[in-house]
Image: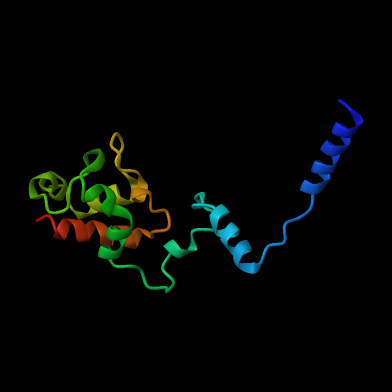
Length: 140
């Protein structure tokens, strides 16, 4: 390369190193575009996922827990989950008794897609039992 080409190339590199002066609106738009889509919260990590836990000390109703955690599978039958309202699908389960149903909700069911608490680790055992009761009431 010639000295002129090298000088020109160096000048272009130097010119590109200057910061662009952005106004507040432009900065906000950039921050919005590069913001994370979501976050991952590991079980036991109390620094995230706080919105999933009820703000009051009162437990959520069975319907609230169902809508937040159970509906995805129990309204569609995903993974073989009995649908709420399907009397035949719930009959054998209901026949095992309320304690067995509550235990399945809290501990999960081995060999099926039902994991402990339906994956709602922020739910108390009492809330899971209320959700199970809500589903059973709608399936008798």
